[in-house]
Image 1 (spheres, rainbow, N blue to C red):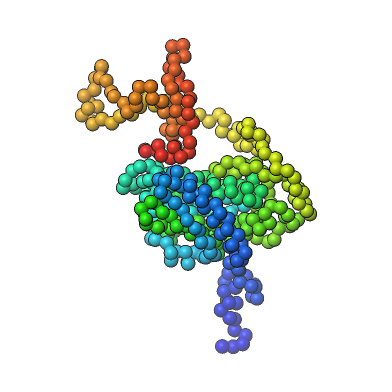
Image 2: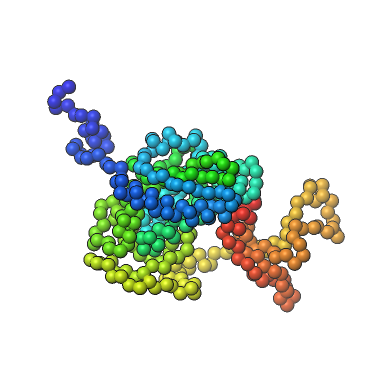
Length: 356
């Protein structure tokens, strides 16, 4: 080969649009990996507790083990068909974030959450998986807000899809893969993969390593997206109270100021909510349900009494767009029927009651 011939590395650089002599792109530092792994390990106990509430008391999450990887490597670890739940961060540390699980794992989780057997991953059951991941992401965001002081953290609404592994849209280049051990109470250990893009990993690690106490005037390259922001809301996980901070050349430590327990809506939130205030939604009060054979339905006539699955005096269900949100008791207002709300359904109960 002539001395003037290009090396393979130089050819690769030209093909990728880079300059000859450029250093190859790195895959993330060990310091960043440790920071994320330590954070995720510290929040796993809460994730496991919430997961057990959604499924069965014996279910648990363990781990995770975090490592930098790429598309080709992780595809070798995945089964042929997987369920992917996109949960990208939309603010705070914006970037790609997702959960991946085997198809059979998703079916087992849905079965425990809906108390059904032999479930199919149709649109409804995929929404159940999305609800589960939404709960996990909300817990993580709350913990991350507390540790970094970044209270503008939010994610998109998680959305689950079932696809062949070759069609999974992983982040380009290297990314962080956190692998959990999932136990559904049957002794079989399953894997749950959580993926962070490199930009999100660097930004979160930077915030964790600085502990939101002494941020320099300019964060390092790669950590500029969301490394030092402040706000009011953590999506899906609740609010966290942090001490006031003056981010300048030095930290100004002040006493912790806890917010009022009175519900408060910021001006930005009020503006966002006002966009949908005039949207109509169907509200239904359901007295009860029953199932009948077709021949029984055809045999109904005037005077037929239909027995429902609710006891006399039991609270009725209040549904919005066919989703259970509350329970109440029937009242009479003048000559009209009404319902008095007695209980707001929690997210865990809402998932368990998704039977259709």
